[in-house]
Length: 221
Image 1 (cartoon, rainbow, N blue to C red):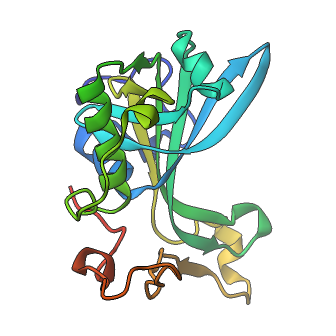
Image 2 (cartoon, rainbow, N blue to C red):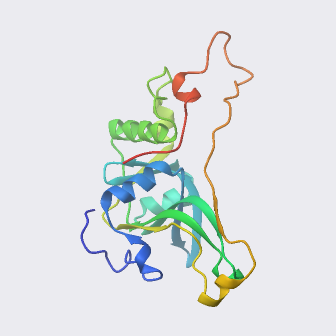
Image 3 (cartoon, rainbow, N blue to C red):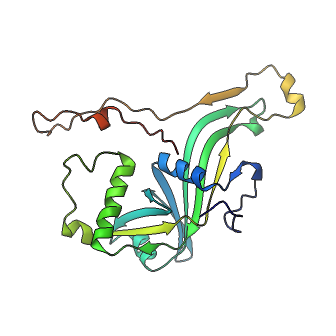
């Protein structure tokens, strides 16, 4: 992926002024998000599944059980549409029609490649853990065993065909509606982190690590 012209599939047509084709912007949104919605067409019907993911360079990593219908479809070479959205706020307009949301989103298209090399699979699984909570893999977590690697399918989806769409700012009302006696504006939203809760079966003497105590989802490019 680069900053070149979008493909027919990634070109934003509705509210095209909100489109961003810059590679770094796409990466930043993906690095902050947590859940991807993965869409395929299976047996003639659309299927969309929420999944955890990670970005490794210019590839998006997805994983699942070998018995999963979605992973079986990916192994068979089906095309995917993957979306990730970070919600930043609610936009309250003076008319019902113009209510909206502020968001940052990415849409990617492509045909995934199966990662079969054991070392590459292990590295991909580590990337998936690190995407969720950076620092976790180096904190004494048990490595994946052979059985776990065998029962897991991991695929990579190139981000060569991806674009972002972003909305920011106040509502955009019709000119005559600005005279209405109704409040309009934005309600900012952000994902907050609560106090970590110990597992009831946590071994005595194990304290909350710094990377957990200071966890945040806000990422920078």
